[in-house]
Length: 98
Image (cartoon, rainbow, N blue to C red; front, top):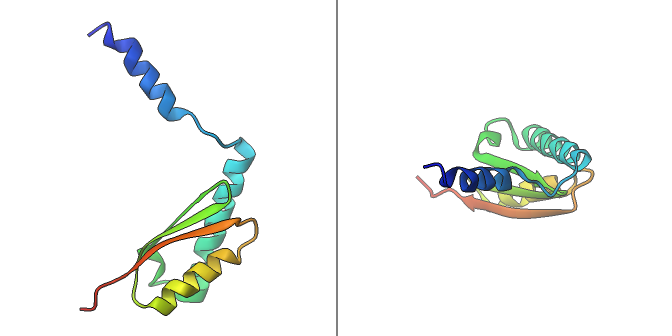
């Protein structure tokens, strides 16, 4: 067990590294909060729990399920309109009809 300890520590430390500065991390948190807030106000509060928003280096990724293609397009447009967003990756999928 003892020979594996240094290897285990190295693996853990490698997982903790980030390529973002503290300032960029704060910017990404602000972007994520702004996108979520704008989605809630424009699409409605009931849609937001189905959409996951992640921001890294100004690139916003949307994931989850939406009811219509129009909602999907609107969510992407809303995210693109938020300040400091460089690009939007749309991984939203249409929910199957019941």
